[in-house]
Image (cartoon, rainbow, N blue to C red):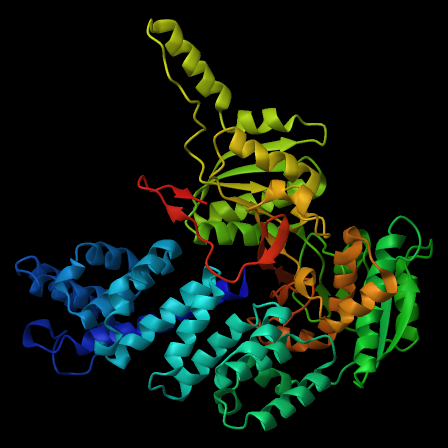
Length: 633
């Protein structure tokens, strides 16, 4: 689950509390007072509030419009404040919004939209809270009503991947009269949006923005993303930024992530051991990760930052891993990064306690509810779950899946399916393939084209007159999730158009792009949306430049270099992530957060293939709806 997804329940609960207060303030008539004048106990108050809401619903049935709709709105607001989303939706669906004033409509959009979002109907909620009517009436809506609605709009746009719309909404919120807490909340929300942008995009906007306020924000977000050096270097850069922009809102009300940097009390390790296979079957992977780690190390060193002593140990030999680990401890290691081998990670998980904090570079089959071991790797499961969340938020519900029979393909398939089902989607068809598969037949069969052609033959045999017939694909899929390497994806995507499914939105993981721009070959996967490593767009990153200059990594190994570089960034920041689970470290492999059982979850940026080349997605790419309720690309 993404960091933003984890924030949504808190966001909606906060909005619900405000909604209840507003609703009760609007119920100050003798007929709707929830009981006697004597202050009620909390449990009694909840019961009284529910009774008041139900009484309003009953009274509304006897009233003409607009009183009927206004009374139902009051009831819906009370019920939402009580967390009764089902009754809120039933009540709000009976309201005719045309009968409401502009201010009442804003409250209706907030209450109904929040209830929809709480039930994961983000697409419908966003349609409601971004209705054109609101854009024409903001000046008539009181700030106390506008603020919770605008917060909901900003969070929904962020959740749907429309970063630019979310940023604009946060800017508008900043113009409202805000108290201290609301200012902190808005600044934190804006920070979360800005740090989703690639560094190159932030740098460009910082140079070109006509607004000094936003120019400062872009510079600050760039500082926050720049975790290639150590924490002290970031703090030095933050101090310089404050001197340059002393009156900026983020100086008096800094985002939580920046506050955490300054609150980090633990001292960084002075001696770090890097345990990697430099020989044996995993030797090439181990070398790539080591070189990425050391490139980040030398980037920090060149920047004048304090750096630890690093000792490298080869775990690819026949020497037992336990002995290598103990040797590193005996040599003074205060933190250990590694191992890479999954079996050796399992050994650490089976150990009751570890003598020093350890950042493993792979995942075992379970987590660990202690502070001594964190697992970090390039799990396909993270990407597959992220695809499921994004596709669901964009309104899709019926998935078609094509996956290779390989181990990574089946792990991705299982993770997507579990997350998709958990969200409420359904898998209409799932097919596996091999490298030798006839992809034309695979796609045709999955789309039920042979059955459509069989119906044509049956009709022709019964009718004497000429028959115009176009085969039709199955109608119970509204998106395709394809797990594929570039060579397979280039064969699968064109088959969709050939078999009457060219409009079907296609989602993929980062494996769909080879790493090198090849416009001629990748035109065949135009339009595919995929989770991309930030590495892909971080050409100005000093660590990446060092890696490219010194190692010229093949695209297949780029992600391993990025993993090594991020391991160097990550291990000193683990106390922050452990203390504040909603925080993220922005690296070359993605936005990294820590689960309670010590597993790093990666959230990658979204990109699509456009004219044969990958481009980052910063605006809403949600498909439009057809008249029958289905979606198209």
